[in-house]
Image (cartoon, rainbow, N blue to C red; front, side, top):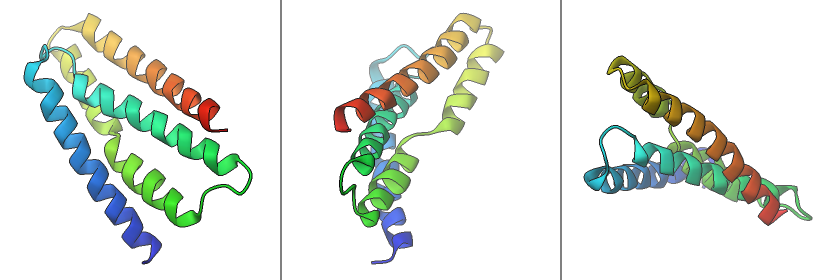
Length: 122
């Protein structure tokens, strides 16, 4: 299997999971805050941190697994564009507090989750 096919496979799985998680979380959540996007972005950051830590360790991960899980799965699971759009929409609706919380919490939690994943796996 080529690396491009692995990216496609991982991407398909990540995109479907993102859709399902977002739909599930938004069904019962307050509409003001984009919980689905927040959860997939933080979760994907954690997984990518884990993968990066494993890659840095002795022996590392095989290239096919890094491409499948990191580039494909995590790349499709996380979504910077939806995060940006949801933050802008909150601001346009006058919900500046929610927009600020969304922006700050997503960045801080994403970096923290990635760092935690790295620490656990390295």
